[in-house]
Image: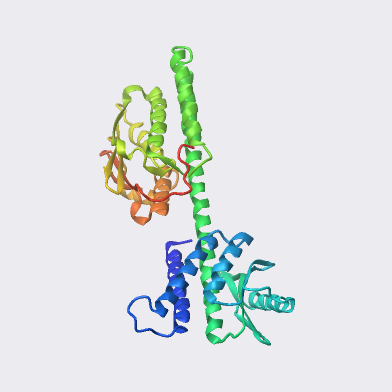
Length: 393
């Protein structure tokens, strides 16, 4: 789903909130007091009930989330009963008192009609009004929000429809979050797959070359190889710390130096205060590997890779620089845009992941030119909440 769709969903949620607040505020008489008027209290209560429902709806449409969201939405509408259904069954039922079975039977019929027509349905019974509004995802009905009210007018019917649209928008956002998570996982798998064939083959060859001439060095390299691959192929967590990523990079460079010897030189300047910073898993190692493979490998005399990390207030500024072959800026633009395949795949994957996690302004900044080396800069927010990160996994 695109950024434009995300913006549309956010605007939709805000508009729906305003409409619901307006409906409830209209029912409250105006007061002359400047603070704490009845209208202000009604507005606060409406926003409060909406905010209570949002975290549950973010879990998607299931029995647990629907039951918890229904409790807040019934209070929002001030009705006797509220039911959230999918296309097959009632997932969440919240009532101020038990509804008679004939009313429930009529309500189920109203729900079916709302889902079948994708339109709000109203069923008036003696002393009771049933209103069912469809839940839509990409225009397709996936359920309904239904309310039971003793004296429902046109304003209440409209409010139920707006609540259903609000719930639909939240479910779409939940689907978007799930899609993002799957995409990020797919990109991490792609990075792992990129590391596997090229790096593993060369590392094993390097280790084999020391078995007869320097067995102790071979054993040391086997341990480094095992630790690096264990880190790269771990299953837990989308994030790691800068310290852990640097440890993995150190192992990677030890293995590469087993092949290239003193042709690869490394300089590290890391501010201690940024070491605990959470960064996306495998966001630096591919940049260092790119510097080795595309920057220094082709140079007979090798070169220098410099990794620096400094504290920039709310950000950790991380740079990976090499004095190697450099890249053509136009070709680099094609790589980052995804129109060029095979070369520098790791750069594009890291750039896309950073933009998806932190926003479009936090992608890679790359300064390069043929024969002039490459400088890659990342600005990582230090204090972004990452509740699902598993540090040290």
